[in-house]
Length: 351
Image (cartoon, rainbow, N blue to C red; front, side, top):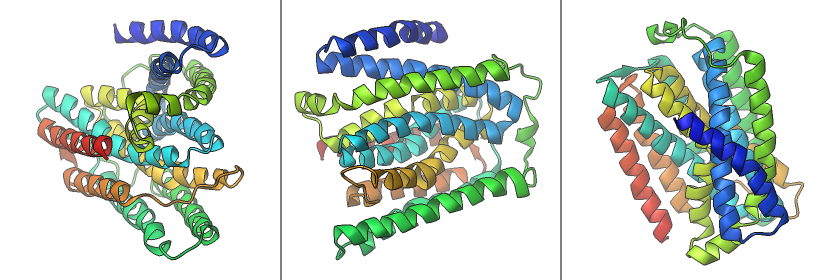
């Protein structure tokens, strides 16, 4: 039933979005239309990556899901940078961290926990990811804010560039560690489950769907960005709220749907890899890449967040580390994460 709804939204939304763009429909109508269409396209990306996850295994499947899920946000952010909306981009990065750690993981743990009293996942992966989360968010994001207080814009960009290159190199090393040198070393019993499940689509079709959906998202995202300013003025929303909540939810829709579906099927290794793996990818790859790409535009983006954003992200990381380090979860832990997301959402709305 859900797939039929997304199919209808896709086949109606894409052509109508194109028509509305060229006919210059009102910005609010286009904003809603673009968001719904991107979410529908994201569902196809989620189904395709789920098929690839069955073939490739939970780690690579989760990595693929996180990558293509973040591709949507990366595309939106690039066009936002081109338009000079640096505040929106930084806020959307904050929103991705909060959304993945609190909303995606929270919904996954809650929905899965309603069906299964205890759900287990690879505790070694959880602890490894915890260390990277602490480094990426609390060290790499806080340090630029601390040291940039007495710096001019040139030095801030130099600091951000150096940190960005370091983050990208460490992220690539982390992938090499997990997928090559230590692949299977810390494998848990839960990783061996579900080998008999058939993928919905074959590898070729799944890859084709991913590529086509990504191209469609790129076109719609470029035009979505141009509606932000008018929508913000119409609803009284700040750039911070649009970035933290709206852009982050739309940009990560594929991961939201996929992670919850995996948890409902008791595939917690994949669900956790999507939620936490996506956060790491945003912090250690997407954000640094955006900093480097911004050097090509008229307005560059230093990797410097507000204290409100840093506090929210650091709190989310600490809460996730405490909850996930035992390698198992339940519906109440999911509800706790969701409650934290609601509290932070209210704060950013009223800020």
